[in-house]
Length: 614
Image (tube, rainbow, N blue to C red):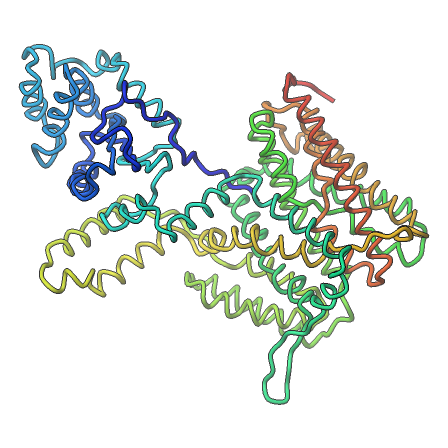
């Protein structure tokens, strides 16, 4: 699950010879503002900047860079006028005039700034915007702003890192003083914004599990995962081991996120168009069928034959992390293709688990689960946009599915189907409402104002905030990071442990070979073949910016089964020795798939022909 964040770092370091600065060059705190003289928010926050400079004194260096509002002729001319100042002192004199002389920037402000600079009356502000664009300083600032991920004005960078918090003095002060809470939050955001982070945590969890299993703590760790945990209600009790709470409970959140992601892609994302969706869907189906077939051809009839589902899965976190680490060598559309195919693959995997790896079924609890699905459908049909009712029904649904004998993680996918989406909000209407509320609150004074916004205003702001995104988008945003950075690493830690010994593979040769062949050969073969057939039949269209060779490389990465393969293997092989051999096969197969996939993509990215045919 990859969500690529915009840059949060300052692209161009502060340069004393080129930037406009107030404060000593060696100040420990540097605040860079990208602003526009025609931006009402820049003008409003300017007063707070003055107060902060007064409070911090020589500890603060303030830098202003131009980012004129797009399409604003007067904003561009004002920036170029300020740059005509003959000295740094003259620039700041013009800056103050342009930013503070009136409530909104006007031609009179430009005339006054021109007089302050001592420029001839005919020089500015009558310069057309097209000629003004030739100012190198302004153009350099605009390029720097875009490279730094600036999309709104004002945007602030504190010591090189973009500040995304509130613009009041207290919040600014916390960020500039680097309070412990702010440091922890910043470090967490930086790590989460790094594309391979989820895959790295998953890898660390697996390595730690293997190390613990082969240390003196191995038996104790194994016993720890078998500790019972549950609830009791009078004489009734419900209890599972810690391992089962992770595999049946926490992993439900992972499949909830997967379900919401595929729902988003098919409604408003890259798969909203039928032909665009056809390619990754066909690839995922082929990438599930071929490994199962390869496995079945190698494994003879018997107790191992039930494990055909092990090599059908793809570990999205690992595959996407490797693609992200290759940077521009992998086209964005290929990342989208692999991510979408992996998500469809995950949905298919949980359906396979529910259909083929469930215990004896209880019709009574299955009927209860169907009733609860009906309740979810009614909530959705009634346009209930609060998440709480869906969460409450979802918990009951999980309990019924678990008791029915079907794998409980199916509840996550079913819940994702019914958590509602919503048409995009009218942003102009919401902005007008927010402005009206803020203006009304700003007119309040005395003790009432000092105590903060009124309760009616807070309720109105809560309603506005809720309307900004649909319940499905809100749950996905909230749960996505927890799934990637908590659930999956815990799953790896609990399930990847294996005591490596000389006899671990003894008597399991066909099983190990079948799983490895399914992942390394069957997975890419099925994925590429299904993609080719879909394109040849006109059902799907391959984007032109990546080649078939690059698609083969991505298909090889899809052979990284790891998390999902471990999950299915745990259901397919209850015997300890069989499960241990399956783990080894999954590890080796996933490593080979990752090496092969990276090698193909790395070579193809150096000079691939996107129009190449198979």
